[in-house]
Image 1 (cartoon, rainbow, N blue to C red):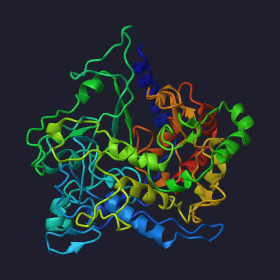
Image 2 (cartoon, rainbow, N blue to C red; image 1 turned 90 degrees about the vertical axis):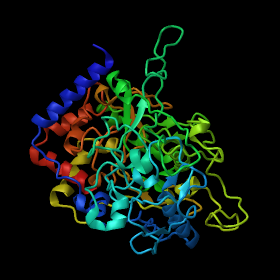
Image 3 (cartoon, rainbow, N blue to C red; image 1 turned 30 degrees about the vertical axis):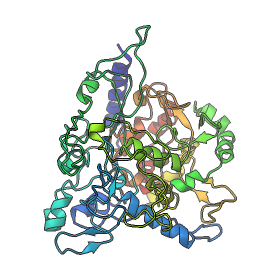
Image 4 (cartoon, rainbow, N blue to C red; image 1 turned 135 degrees about the horizontal axis):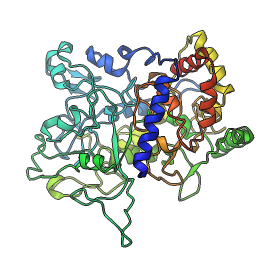
Length: 532
């Protein structure tokens, strides 16, 4: 039996246990989908903006005026709908204003997702065409969720024309502006937004490549889902004939690993935690963790050796790195951090498209919202994104948790869950932004990577995180997530908990203790998780 087959059996076995042995149930998305981005969009209402970070609970410090203005400019930039041609945006580059075709008025806060391009640089290969397409649950800047697939119809005919919200990778993004993409089977209409990595390298025909010893060559990189072939709003690339990778062949060859979007909320707080804080928490519980078989270790930067902490495998050092990488990897937009395009076919990039495309502004005027002497427009989009993330508030728990949820919080710690999902850390004592410094961060993560066993292995190594290792995902906001685990394989939080127990998983003894609890106690822990 090969490794991938054994992994599949482990998953199936864990799923069977989850469905037959436990009587607790997932109460569902906290607040219900009607209170999330997808539900609001279906009613033609605006999805809530990312919340500005709350005052520092220790010092009372708040964001200063410049930080606040940059935060809101970051929202405008992250909401931009990208066109491929550098001069093809329908309205002025970077403008938050979109013309409503119904009444001809400019709207500073259009119904999302937008239907009018107001930025440029979309790559010939990409996964999305605007940041919030993958970060809209339960508000803009959150995790992956659902969006209406026909925003143009909504804009023209009002909310009644809206189709039910769905995975934007099912129809909206692959076909927007006439793109002729084939949607692979793993992008389901009401399923999770999935990014694809190949485990091993393949040639143009999708066949495995081998080294001189006949061994498969590891890959692990992202392979963008969509190409711009057929796009109708870029006259500069009429000869583009790019084709998508044969994803179905790679699925058949067990050569794919999936990732779903993580929330951007509260990342500035995590960015402000010192390495010594992370290591102190690890050291403080090392004996208790060892008794339960819990190890864990930091992923680290290959340059300076400091702890990396963002992404499913803690592969990114900072939110600045995350912003630049996501702009390039997910949208194909080159920038100062990632200056080369993934796809450089000149027939699909146009003769006037500069690379890198998104850079610090040096224009002499503001005709394209890029004047050097306009403080809001100097920074590149990817730098504005990191300011948005830096000052986006952390997810907030239910202010009125049930008695069961309160009791579940106590049980959560007593059976060992908190040894990995550390409830609270502290930011650095001194920072240039007082609102961020020396304040608690209720993230419910140790920011370490752990061996999660064969059942959750994805076979991808990133830095010091091996193919079975993942960062402890912060649990704040988990109560409002739709899909769980790195690949979104379940929307049932009970099943997500039990899938932590697979062959070789460090969570085995904790999940074993969970399984021995009375049904009411197990339900209390589930209720606690949904209250976060």
